Length: 234
Image (cartoon, rainbow, N blue to C red; front, side):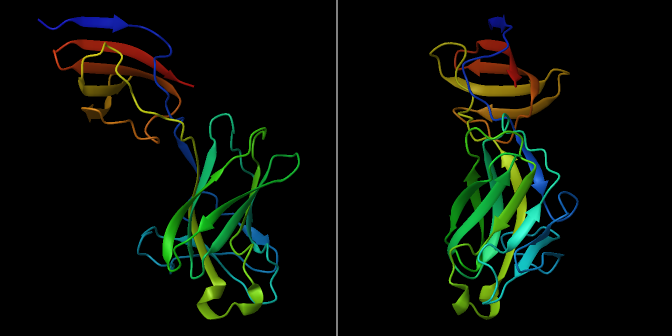
């Protein structure tokens, strides 16, 4: 007969992601992009669809006389840095190089960069939110910050970006909370009893799976023992 042990605790021996929030996606969220530097920002439906089939994306077109920091800005944000530690952006360019984000929280502006390495393809770039920032209210993207604009020509001048997402990547997955016996199945339920995910064997929990709140974790080991526990994602 299976042994069922109920462990009621607010925190168990695992680290979870705080989930994610979409900052801008071109369709229905974060559409108020404004011009930064000597360029105009457009939201278009004719962006390259391979690698990013979404309906719309943001784009700029620069010239050899543009400011190096030309790009787009988005204000009115409320990115809680106690919940998220990174921002990701899908980027498409025809030249490699650094992409820079400027993050504003009312204090000194912070600058973070990532390297775009795949010209002619969508690439997901991740930017670490600097320690010590408070709620981020404004974000600016500069896709050509280190490029020699005097040599730029044709389609090299175009950049698209999409799916700006704040997220937390500190999740290490769910660990064995029963004993040293191998876990064969892990089920995650909402407190109302809805099953939201079933993991088999040593599968890890996807970083973006769980948002803030309470969940019920039910684990079954190789001997048929079942342990249920309450977890809090804060």
